[in-house]
Image (tube, rainbow, N blue to C red; front, side):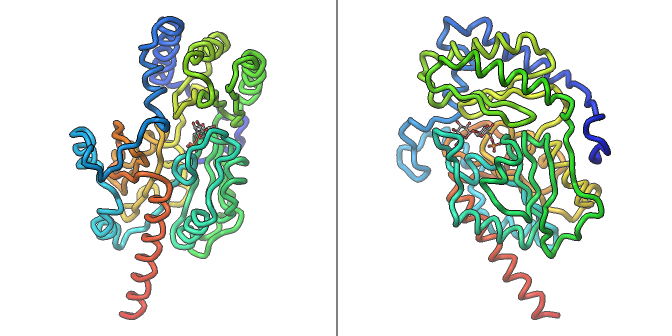
Amino acid sequence: MSAPANPGSYRPPRSAASTANYKKLMSHLELHGTNSRNSSWLESMRASSPTHLRPLPFTSLAETHEHVEWKRRHPSVLAKFDQVTAAAKGKKIIMFLDYDGTLSPIVDDPDSAFMSKAMRAAVKAVAKYFPTAIVSGRCRDKVFNFVQLSELYYAGSHGMDIKGPTKWPKHIKPQEKSVHCQPAWSFLPMINEVYNLLLERTKLIPGSKIENNRFCLSVHFRCVEENIWNRLAEEVRSVLARYPDLKLTQGRKVLEIRPTIEWDKGKALEFLLNELGFADSNDIFPIYIGDDRSDEDAFKVLRDRGQGFGVLVSKYPKETCATYSLKEPSEVKDFLRRLVEWKRVSMKEKQRIN
Ligand SMILES: O=P(O)(O)OC[C@H]1O[C@H](O[C@H]2O[C@H](CO)[C@@H](O)[C@H](O)[C@H]2O)[C@H](O)[C@@H](O)[C@@H]1O
């Protein structure tokens, strides 16, 4: 799965599963879109980001049985920190971090999803000790502008645009060839065409926003009144009906339009492990932290490889392939800091023994 020499010449296969998902989602929009408020896509769109519900604190007596059971299956990685570091001992940790909802809190305006200085310092410290990648649905340039750390790998557009660090941290040998992977290169003109069509078709829908993430698009529902979600979805449906090579996925109050290629955040994770020279390595310990559905592809890869683990960032129980959980970005920051501290102490200890 090495980077194509000429990204423009690479035509990845279309996935049957993706096509089936696309048809399923499209048929939901078609069959139930305009009349039924109970269609499954509407329900899951609501549930994807229940920011306006009263949050149930994890420690509250009001915790539901479901919540308790979910926490038992996906405990806090902070609470299990000693267990985690015991498993990672002697192995090489590689850190993968989603951006929105993981490093930055979810906000109404996607252009204002800034990360705090403290979070940036925590990510910088992690990258000093472990190879670190940001894996985001955003386009690579945009997520780089938010994070502003040159020593990281960046996988934008759900992993369809990967680039290596421009400043190499000491622990990584600078690669002879620069890491570069754009498996959906040939879809660029189509994505731009659909972007312009959607801008035009949705301009009268209050609160809607179409975000161009280069190899994919996001249609934002967060600031659209729920009673017109169907109208927005219908516009998306009617545009996409003419583009069978694009598929729809659903995120947190967002519909994402992507090329129907067999590529996702899980594939990006595998690509990066290969590029780092860990393809067949048994002594690696990859950790992937993310909050959204698209992160599940990466959690699943780690689960299937039996290496490292996934951490889901969520205050609410969600079906997930992640092993552990964290409630919110501030806990992600705490976890990153603790990991750095643990590494510093174990390096000192090693030096003392030698
Ligand atoms: O993979 P990610 O880095 O998590 O990107 C997924 C989407 O994130 C952004 O949207 C989400 O965050 C916004 C800002 O907090 C929020 O307004 C929106 O409702 C969320 O869905 C980004 O704007 C999208 O393009 C990404 O697809």
